Length: 301
Image (cartoon, rainbow, N blue to C red; front, top):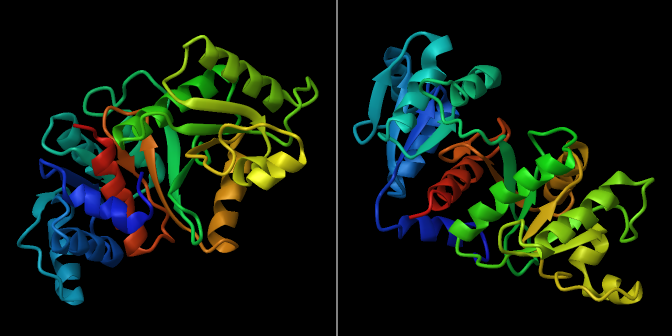
């Protein structure tokens, strides 16, 4: 298990095959600096899709050299995402990255029946956190795609996320299925879902992992909190993956980790045939590069 983002980036550099990322909408200074960093770190091959004249002009203004990247000219902004997705769909690239373009247009390209990356599964967001004082990275899902997942959708979200963790080398990830407390109550549907998910895991209906829930965040994070409540936990203090009950919980918890805990974040969209990176516009270049490194590792062998 990786202790921090630097370790994750180092692992991506050691992949036996140098993979290719395709960036949709590259005519943006921050995106171009990210691409330059990917080349500098020798992390992957880089394909930029967008208006070639504008990309080259912005690169010149920023003092960036583009000789090591591949440029695909697409002047029609509405087609940039589709052109980039086709590169991944056809096997010319391994990871699709959203640059400066409309999110709806980008997701439409991801789900395009002809050139997209749809698999029949729903897409979900898996976010990774590097928090000072924690002994390892941990993951959270789904704080960015499915608003109020049903039990069936939570099964899909878990299958998506645990599959990625397996590809990262975590054979039996410890999964905390979050709710407000540990008591199952029909008045709090997330506790009922958590109990059912654990029952499904016991029947072998979920991917290999250690599942526990319903469980409150304090108990999941601190063995002393579990002890104070008289709870014997197999995951407390050593969680790899948090499953949140809804998008509000995931969004607020994730941002709190960043703003109050000083944590760094990197997220990918999973459930497509290949990993998709949709970093926040506010993300640092380091955060964007880390998300891409993680996506490269998530491709598997």
